[in-house]
Image (cartoon, rainbow, N blue to C red):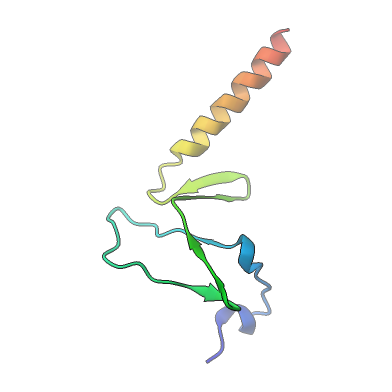
Length: 79
């Protein structure tokens, strides 16, 4: 069976790949995934095109980090 990525000629950098289970409930069992014998790590957040996404899609970590960056920039401009 061919994998979708291979059929689509998509290159995947397995060491940089993470898995997020997007769900409001906790999974009853955790699956293990691998790409070319590299185990994919499951995590609660991941960065995608500059936005931090969390498993509940609240974006709270992204908002917190953005506000901290905005505060730093505003204090530097004030000086």
